[in-house]
Image (cartoon, rainbow, N blue to C red; front, side):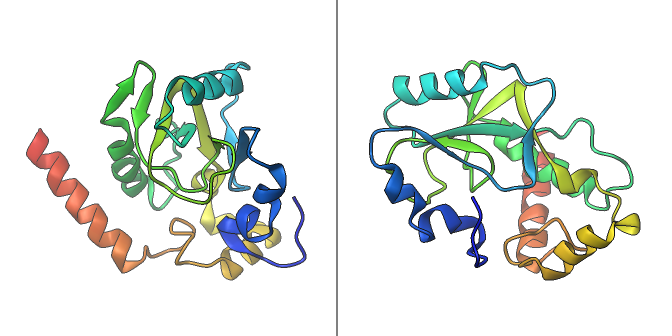
Length: 182
């Protein structure tokens, strides 16, 4: 969807697109820098729709983000692994975890507004890649430099040299919880 204005990650709702879709069809919203992994089976959307149909209390179903292949040059590699690991803890159904999803690639129940709550993330092989995690920030293209400079760092946490204080605090808490669980 093209917009003349940058409405951010809630653009499908703020632009009026989601209400235009009506209350009858499942729909997908994704950040533009999240793509299904090349090994994701082609039946992924049927699987997501089946999970929504079979679980009426679930609002959306989406991908878990792949973290097992992050390059060493990614400055926040260990932070991302710590962060994403929390979303692989609560098995809801075989192959699915109960975990919040923001606007990372997900299929929504018809008519829903933007929310992060009752969500499922799929387990491998149904994963997606968050493309900025694979970029070498020391060697960005001119276009990528532009996006990094002009992104809202309150929303885009991982595209900066230094993580926001709120994210750093949450990571400290997660690391303490993970250490206590070991």
